[in-house]
Amino acid sequence: MNVMASAREPAAADSAGVPDGSAAVGDAALAEVRRLLVAWRTHEPGARLGVDPEELHQLRVTARRLDATLGLFKEHLPKTLVRARKMAKSVLRTLGATRDLDVQLAGLAAYCSELPDEERATLEPLRERLMHERVRSQARMLRALDSEATRRWLQTLATASEAPAAEAGPDAVTVAAIMPRRVRQRFRRLRKAVKQLRGNSSMDDYHKVRRRAKQLRYALESGVFTYGKPAEEMLKALRRLQDRLGAQQDAYMAREHLTALAADPSCGLPPATLFLMGRLAAHHTKVTAEARATVTRCWRKVRGRRWKALRSRLGEFEHRAAVPLTAVPAPALLPGTGTSLAAEDRPLSH
Image (cartoon, rainbow, N blue to C red; front, side):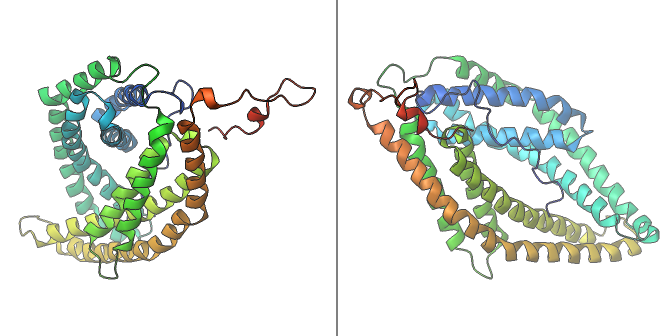
């Protein structure tokens, strides 16, 4: 299990105040950027304090979603915002270094909780070493957040997202017209990455699958309230797949860090601590292997009936978006009521 899993990660934008499928895609994209900037301002103070690791996690998630949004809607956003994506990736790397240490500290605490007191005390020098690294990483992160480049990036996002969308008027492309195609495209990329996995696949191969799963998830979450139940079911399956891949990645990174520490003659850790670090590294290797074994099972749930149901729903929305409003007859009323037949058949909302 991923020690610091994204259970509290926001699933998607609330439907209230978020454009529906009939909105112009440029307007919807700008609204999403504005929503994510609000999330950034919410979590940045806590991430700076460094008391609750969840705040840094949420800040990193927000940066990742900003990057995904700028990529997903790049054809419909101002060039200023598209260019800002490069800085988003730089910010992600900065936040990721500190977040990795939070994950490793949480993993060490979980491992020590099942050890006898004597062995727990033996691993205390390792915990202190990781805490020292975390303090230094936090300081580097704060310098990066305070840098002129980062503050200018945030100001650029705020200013550009408040400007009118480039595409406007009755001829503007709608969300419902393009999102089904984008979702299918991201599903195909994920499927291709999964098919390339082999028994001897590297962590880079698995990380690519994880990245593709996130891209599909974020594309779906930007319109989950529109696609209803099929999207909700698909998101559940994607989260399970990401959890397994996340546990694998976290364990691999922790093992690599332990190996590097043990090989460093200047690390200054006692021999007894180094011995238990070997056991901890073996534990991480086991977690990595277990996570790999469950990826195939999780993928079957993604590509099975859930994808078929979602694909069908995407087709419905594409068809509706392609039919001009003038070609749609007035809805018939149910006998003796003021309710239209169309209202009985409207798509499920989030």
